[in-house]
Image (cartoon, rainbow, N blue to C red; front, side, top):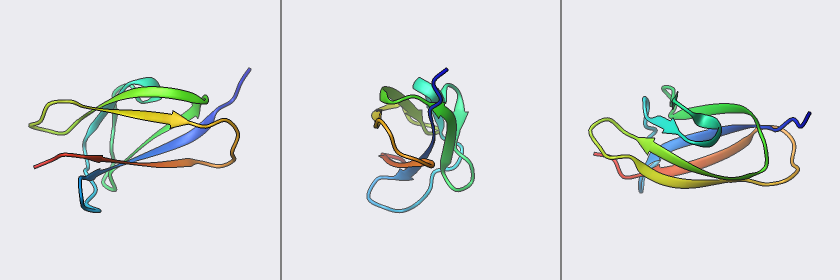
Length: 86
């Protein structure tokens, strides 16, 4: 069986480095995941490819983002996503 990578998705407020804790990440390997206090959601065994994600921050509509996991590579893949948040 194929084994994918660990993906660490960091969600931050647009234009800043401010982490967004408690954001809900849906889609691909992150179905129903929530960001932790550092604004990070993790998924294991993610296969290479493109994934459409919906990111919901309390009080706002879901915001769509694309995630591309490249072929190869070792260790966790860190991805930063900026969202518009109050």
